[in-house]
Length: 402
Image (cartoon, rainbow, N blue to C red; front, top):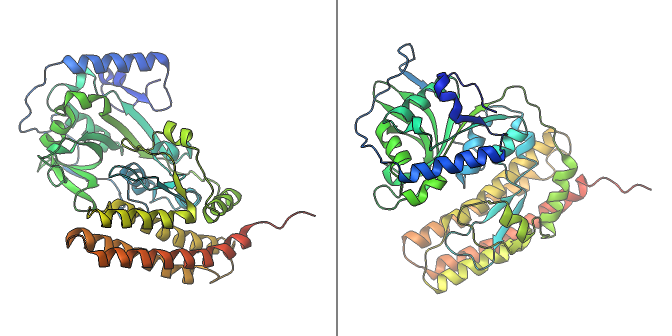
């Protein structure tokens, strides 16, 4: 089924509800992609909005960049939207408990927190509405049509999540160097300056202004081999949702973390399509990830190779989120006041120290002292975390029935 969005009737046919995924939809999208592969591309120069004349000149939707999970954009972008609803915390703190470190990690292999919450998960929890746009529709080929579509949706309070080529986006690490189709989110516009407010990774997780034509080039002029990854979805916060906090499920996940149990079998991880370039689906879980981190940094140090800073960022985010979770559990009177989180704050500080050492190692050249420092900190962290979390888990486990 198609979702009414306030667009012209002729445009409604290429916006569909995210839940609708029939074979007919699949064949239609496949046909659209094949036509896009052979369709000539128009030149894109200076663009302006050519739609309604009664719109505000400047509009920007609420968006929080200071969020606890921002290592990977398919988790961070929807969280930055739903975080303004306080009810999101019951879902957030029931997830992101387990930690997975892949075997023989290479550059693009991900260190993951699981289970994670992506846009579709927030839709399932009734905190987001999502409509997916056919990015290969002929109606979007006219230069400026995408600009008009995005502004119409922003006017209605819709955020636009896109996977577009960051080769064309100023401020992105691969600008004019490498073609890379990546997540971005449009949350505002300025008709005087002809730019969109775009969230993504520049120097950090941030919102930056980008010209209309830069967005259109990133959408239309990506390599044809990457067109299958081009993506556009409209998202809007759904008011009034009240997901339940699954204390029993969270407690079970915490037990898996403490006992280093496998949370997702390799075939399940492979089918989950967690990340585009994730290659390995076996590895260490829970507290065992500390030794996996140590093995990784030691191996990279011996080879005088740069570290993947995203891995140390995920480690820090896992600890920061755990600290916030402990405070949340105390608020809900699941834990005694002051029982755990003050001691756990020291674990978060050590995770920050690991991030700093990894950054120093990469920027100052391969320094064995940084590797030694990281391994010592990681071993201290493991002992401290286990000491704090084991009594927390014991306090949350319901007493056995007689």
